Length: 174
Image 1 (tube, one colour):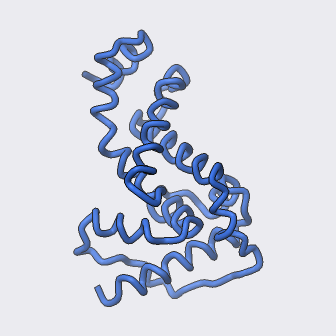
Image 2 (cartoon, helix red, strand yellow; image 1 turned 30 degrees about the vertical axis):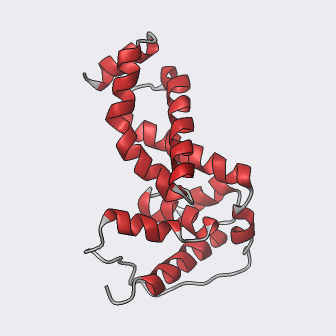
């Protein structure tokens, strides 16, 4: 099935098309959700809530850009909503006045398996993890992250730098 056929089938409430959409994208999107969560269970909750949003908002997909990218954005927004709901992130991101920057060596070990890296990212405090994922993996600018999380651009940069420092301690000389 093409993405267009899947979308049309889902809009017609066709269960087979809905299952196909879920099966086609669930594995990739689960990885996205796990990067923002503290546990497998929380990641799965975010995934399920994200797919509910996908199905509820499918009629708003205009066909501009990739369908997978549109779904990914919904998953990220669902994860951010979960973080906001828990309000835990405020404890880690309230560092408005801090400007802490590291040297530009921002690589992460190439020989790490994706699952190993995911487990390490999940150990980051929620504020660090959120900003790290949005900036390093999703490609948002610090300005965009600030707007999304209702923090300053400087706080986003600080959280990202601290996340990198934390990761560099965990992954020394790899």
